[in-house]
Amino acid sequence: MMKAMFLFALLLFSEVLFAQNKKEQDKQAIKAMAGTYFVDFRYAETFAENPDYKLKEPYRASGLEYITIDEETDNKISLLHLLIMENSKGEKSIIKHWREDWIYECADLYCFDHNLTWRYKKLSPEEVKGKWVQKVYSVDDSPRYEGIGTWIHADGKHYWESEADAPLPRREYTKRSDYNVLRRRNRHILTDYGFLHEQDNVKLIRAKGYADVELVQEKGLNMYKRVEDASDGLPGKEWWEKHRPFWREVLAVWSDIYSQRRDLAFKEKNGDGKLAEALFKLDEDCFKQGKSPESAKSDIRALIDSHFKTVELGIQSK
Image: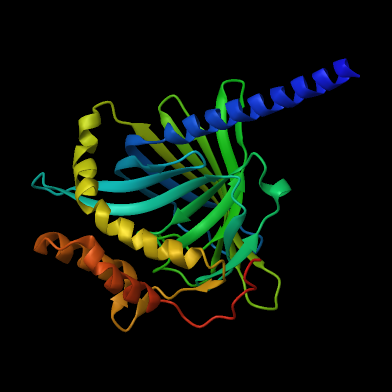
């Protein structure tokens, strides 16, 4: 009897130790994506069921991107992306690009529906065990999409994959209205040159009360090639150190909204324009005038609140 209990305890300890080691491997893989990269973005439509649909021209863009670990706790790693632009005179400017939060065994998901509406979903402990949720946010820290998956470490390969519905990507949302949901099948793969964000996407037409209609499939390859000279990322690092206090106040407002665990309906524009533009202007005004970011919190809250629209709210979690 004592031997059986000892073996059970040893097995339990081994499982806990394995889980801890696996989690640490996961964290190292996520943090490995920080750094300065030359990024090559490529997208091509591949297949449409409707023979009358004409595939659009492939899309390609590139740029220098600085990715920093903006926050790290035992169960969360936040990566912030900053684009470093250079004009013909050699002058550099920074564009706050997007944020991704990686949260371990997160049970709270905001699932994109359509028309800039997100539905709150509560996951069970069984559904999240050992998994990471990637929460992707726009330039103004408003929601984009969230997916859950398991990091795989095998045969010298390290990758994570998930599926999540999302709004139209920035490269298309002002140019197209023939679909309204992008079903993203994301795969993040560590490589010898940096990492690869591979996508097998489906462009969907969604309307309330009807089944989704598939418009066309798409392949995406975002190749992040690490820049050998780390100093190339210094302009991004320096810009973020100066402007981070303001954007932490923005995050605090969003965190309060997300903590209510309700459905969200968002409007990118209101009578005063786009939320991102208004927040960036407020940030610059605070910075130039030497104002404390804390003093702008009420203005930040008012701006964000003004970009929500009435929605039939989901049931608040218990």
